[in-house]
Every structure is written in structure tokens, then in C-alpha cells.
Image 1 (cartoon, rainbow, N blue to C red):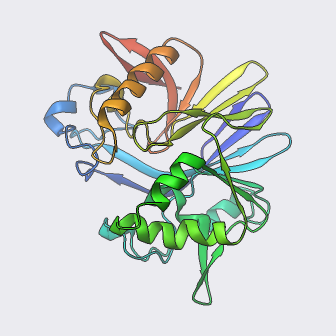
Image 2: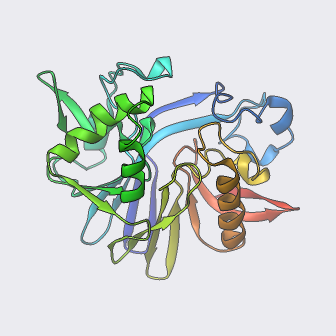
Image 3: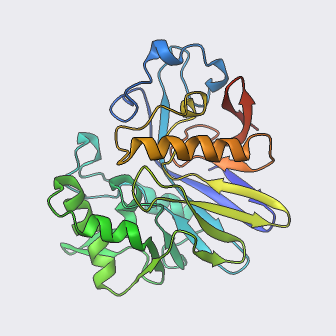
Length: 285
């Protein structure tokens, strides 16, 4: 399991699944021909034959006072997912979390960058046929704009299922705090708005002892979007805004020591943004 230190904060990657290829449904522009020249993406983010590597993982952020899990993947036993391989998973996520030294009862904060299917799944677990909060001692932080947007769209088939089994149960259990896109979680952790992928999308800024990191969420799905910031995801609700967000964030972070940890970046998963001609690339450690 990968771990990073940012001052007094430890960040641990808990992988639910990784894949090679099959990413065109989310990044249709990223054909093998279009990315084959980006040699800096090998071996972590692209195979030798030009297939993109992606990951679904959670990140546990342990500060001196808080134990936070950022985005909770797809989850076991879920149904009604449009990606066939995401239905009825029976994976070892909770065991892996425990082996990393974090029991589900010890998590005190669940932080959702947005409310898509692969970011909220382990909010709940199936117990005796009912969806129960996986992290019973945690407050679940969700963006107010994000929550209200999806709550009002019950006609969206897949998102309705996701909301019903992974969001509504924790809300009805009284565990949800609806927060603004600039909410400060604790001294070391705050949210920053990175909208476009969804209306209330946030990334997670971590600052401790003069060191900085950013957990992306889905304003960027893959490092190839650093080379081509205009490549919007097929799942972006506002492609023009998501593109502006990428140019803005990459431009601000390029050449700085900020560690960028990609929510769907496979392999090393993290690095620092550097300028590369008219665009950018990710330099891994």
C-alpha cells in the first residue's frame, strides 16, 4: 500500500481495483494513437502498448487529530451500475483497510469529492438486507451544491440507484454534514472548488509544516489530461468548465512542490506537475 507524508499528515492508498485499457468510455479522445508519444506516462499510467492504466481507490488521510477517508470507491453488493464489472462486487476493501491499520470504526470523517458511483460506494454496506453506514462513528461530509443537484435528479437511472443505496442511507441516519466547497475540515485539510466534472465538485488541499498536497477527485481522471487539458471526460456535466478548471489548477501548481495525488491515477498515483511545452506532465517521485 502506498503511503505519503505531508508534514504531520500521512496519506494511505487503499485500492479497490486497477485496470489496463477499457478507459475510452470515460476519456474517448485518449486512443492509443493519441497517447503513444507520451513516454513519461510509462510504466505507471500507460502500458508499453499504449493502453491507459487507471485505478479506483480510497485515500485515508490521518492528521494529528482526525482520521479521514476520501472517496469510498464502488462498494460490495451494489446493483444497477452501468459498468457491468462494478455490479455485485465481493472485494476485500474493508480487510485491506484494516490491514493498513484503519478499522472502519476508527474513521471519524468520510469526505466525498462528489457523489458519483465510484466515489461513494463504501459509504454503506449490506447488513441483513439493509444498507447500513460502513463508518458508524464518522461524519459524512458532502458538498451542499452537489447533494442538492443529485437529490433533484431522481430520473437519472444510475445516479438514482447510487443515491438510494450509498447516499440516502447515511443521510437518513443523521450522519451527513452538507458543507460549502471551501469548507475547512481541520487545521491541515480543507476543500477547494474544482467544478465542472459535477456542479459541486471539490478537491482536497492538505498543508502541514510547509508541505502541500492536493487530492484531485475527478477534475482530472488520468495524467494524459495534463498533456491535453482540453480532453474532457465523457462524465463531465460541464466540459467547458472542467477544461477551465484543469488549465487553472495545472497552471497554478506547475513548478511548485505540491504533491498531486490522483484519485484514479494507477501505479505511483502521485507526482508533481511540471510544464511541458504548451501544456504539462506529471513527474513521479
